[in-house]
Image 1 (cartoon, rainbow, N blue to C red):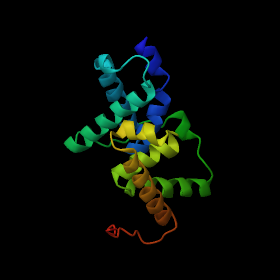
Image 2 (image 1 turned 90 degrees about the vertical axis):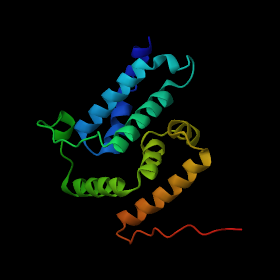
Image 3 (image 1 turned 135 degrees about the vertical axis):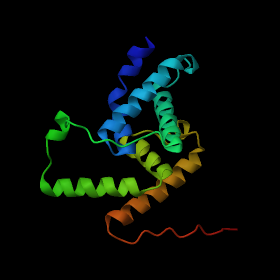
Length: 167
């Protein structure tokens, strides 16, 4: 039953993993590692709770662990998937490339929030649970990430000015 329920979220997990890693092969490995961990730890999931959020939490934690331990390696796939064979128009390819480059240049914390809220359409509360941070942290990371992404896509200098102390 658990495995059957979890299977319906694989496409969404793959999409989030692809955005996190920037590589189809690494994304597939991340999803596989996350699903393996979820199956091993399925007794920690509470029946009736949000399985989608729990699976995203597991995958996010696996990703963070891989980055920290430098276990994630980038490889070039030998074959392109069918979806990758459908090439977008030249202008679209440039925009997609620019967006991907800008997303990859964001700090991991901002990128994760942007992807969960923007791409996966999670609520702030769901994203906060997945990332194990307060909802206010999600909102501030999202705001800073959107602003930074906007500046990068417009070709403006990246302003990493320190935060002002407000009394």
